[in-house]
Image 1: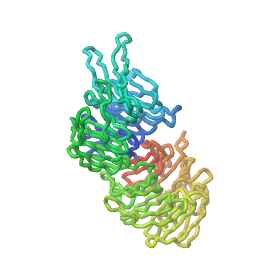
Image 2 (image 1 turned 30 degrees about the vertical axis):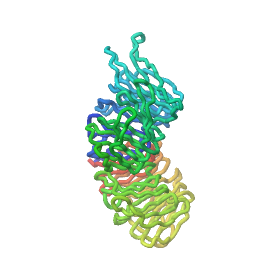
Image 3 (image 1 turned 90 degrees about the vertical axis):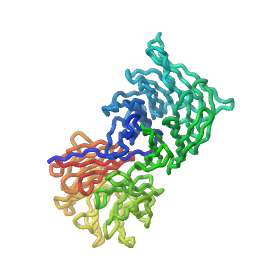
Image 4 (image 1 turned 120 degrees about the vertical axis):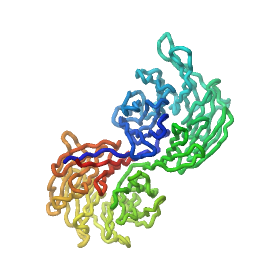
Length: 619
């Protein structure tokens, strides 16, 4: 019998980077967006239909798709693994879901990527103050220059028909105090395209603005600024025409659909406007719950998708901008994941204070709880009607699972240096803290029952014994593994790992229900309360040096899954003690892995802010 893990669903749009979500220009149901270092191609009406483009080694910071829908371009933050913080731009073949070509030259961060209207050329700008124009078909550099300040916006105008084989192109670029209109035309002498540049004339008093988004409509360049203005420039006469205040906290996205312009701001405001030159009218307006970072119209013009800074996607009707929630994800490092008795609901928490209870049938949040303090551990309580969460401020908080916005039912201050891990049974709650203490609390009254201070470093993980529910095991960064007997209120046994810090605990279903620990030296160790030393060990796969962060034994006891600091997940068969699969999906270190109670799925969380649902098959 063999087993296979496959990636089922990716939850990870964090809303960190502007305009990294695009509707496909001809497939009305297809949305393309970034999630950490991956690009997701998703059917908006069926979240189970996802495909992935993987080739970046840092967060995707810029995204565009050609007008014919054949090519997708993506740029990333500076690579942490390559010298000089290189930030490559990758062009993807959309139909084949494969990498077409990669362009280099930018570093630290790609700020903007844009295809020309015919998809032949690609312009990209970077935080290194470089601007490049590439010929996508040949891979040649058509133009590159170091600019005086970073260019946050580069946008193509209409193609100019010259009557010959080689049309001319119009390109607009914006800087802090300057806007340029470039004409890219073919030079017969050199047999290549060259750029000529005309600066836009501003009023005598000047206009100091940071232009962060924009479109070319006819003979006008319309930009959104960080000051909340909509600026209009004439590309024909190269003059500034007007500036209109439209929102607070900056205009973050502008898009066109038919005759309408849709403008979104950092204050969550979305407006539908129509007009010409200096005269513009607002026809409809809506305010979302957080600042908008992306706005994109569907191919049929019936709706928009808006991405917001709190990690959510909203679908808005273009007719009146009525909004409905499409999806939600965490905005920071996801620190824990937990199942209750049901395989259909999973709870996740993040270091930005978010606790989500997801329905795995549609990946929509059932409820959400928010706090200012980072969450380090969460569990779905016995009975599935409460969520317990441990915070950096030392408090244990209990939240209701009411659909919609969760209510806090009670809180207890448990540890002076924050709760690192918590576990719950019908009789007691056990917490481990940054103060190295392991504490037990009465389940209903929340009174402190007992406290142990055996560890010398913060508690990394806790495991309630599955055979003896009054026994709890704790592992710590001080290399110790300790078992506590709550019935007699004392320590049962204290083990020491001679290799490395213990980072995670689980328990076997066979072999005397031994405790399984993972550590930074890549070993899975098996412990029996009757023996001081490990009774077994699984080494890292041959030729690798893993830093294991978390571990969990499958519900049937045959398999064990482990997550590593290098963002990979490893599946082991406990009958052979062999690694049978290596799984890649995350872009940063995995923080936790959990099996669903029915063993059909695995959920992993990571420092990249993503939650990945994996399907598990036995064959």
